[in-house]
Image 1 (cartoon, rainbow, N blue to C red):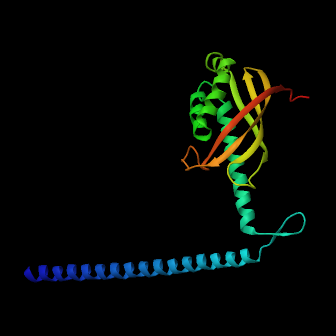
Image 2 (image 1 turned 60 degrees about the horizontal axis):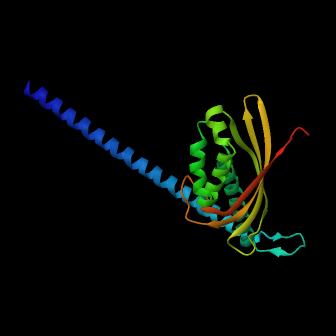
Length: 217
């Protein structure tokens, strides 16, 4: 009986050792595969970087007169223009859009994008013209449909003066009215605030006017 138990113990130990050995082998294989994959990935990234770097050195941009433009300068110009376009769109949307559920939230978001005094002036005008009463009590919906930055000047650096236009829809049940909002102001940089001010810009000296239009004409 003792011999049988001893033999079983030896078999268990042998099985355990084989299992441990197999695990070590598998672990080593996994580490080898992971390391090899990492080397390949790093090599691809390095190759991609230097390929793009070589391509960038060969890219030449020309203006309408045929003169060569520095790529870095053009990239910076495009980036600023894109930022101003996006920031002005968000500002005009939140200043002038809202329904019963979104009005207060939109006004709060606008304060991150536009100088506080300018924004409060726009809010006060809408209030005097009974827009907020119509939204909160009568269920009207104010919504900016489209924003176009018609002019922006970045040649002299900050602040960047701009002019813009927006189409405003005022909906009262089935009845719809459209207004053209024309605005102007200047844009300066400030510390970005996510998600409220991702571009890190602020609009000041902002004014806007609007006139009723007939889009069916």
